[in-house]
Image 1 (cartoon, rainbow, N blue to C red):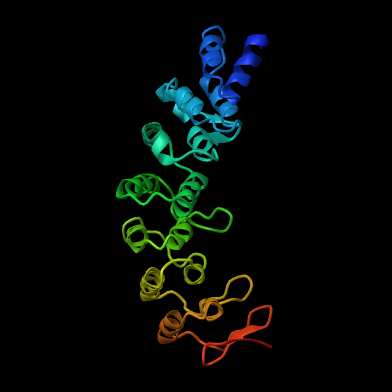
Image 2: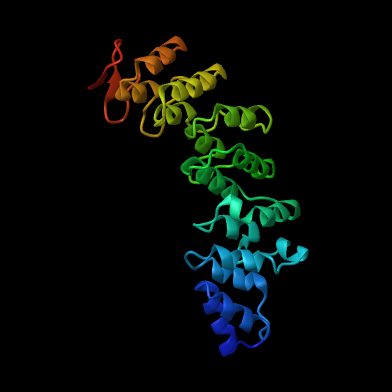
Length: 253
């Protein structure tokens, strides 16, 4: 194993702290592998330019390597400040070389859900990652579909279900849809689409809540009417005693 000295430690420091000039100077006189440097760069903040620089140094065989239990794809995508646009060309190569990981997939979908990017180009990039992923894997109790349902984009959710075989029966999509903060039209369109798939309208989550209870809490009459039309019942009780009356009001026993 190559012995580490002052130059190696200074190079790692430069990677983590986005010192590009120092990085270029030290890299030529050390034998550290780019994957080691990438792992260090991801520990820093505001470091996306350094990450992109290191990705440019990789060769095809590097993309298959696992570092501390993580693939390069997972390492880069799970970096807090990574966005798809900034490293898209690198991730395209990664996706053609190694299998995606469900953690990466959900990380990207979560970013899409929380971000402000609405361009069709961005949606196409999300599709690229989903095509290489197991879309039904759960991470922290949620699938990629869970994140995208909250984004109220019926077109993308429909694509996932109808073309990528995402399973809408996993999780509590109706409840998540009912808690969305969006315009009434967007909310109702997503809810109606999910109901049309035959999801269990009375399914309870771990706290015993149903979609009807959530809609009643929001006092959303249109959603309540939709849920009643698809067979929502008032005979369910949540763990905290909540239930819904025939008139769509929330009560506690």
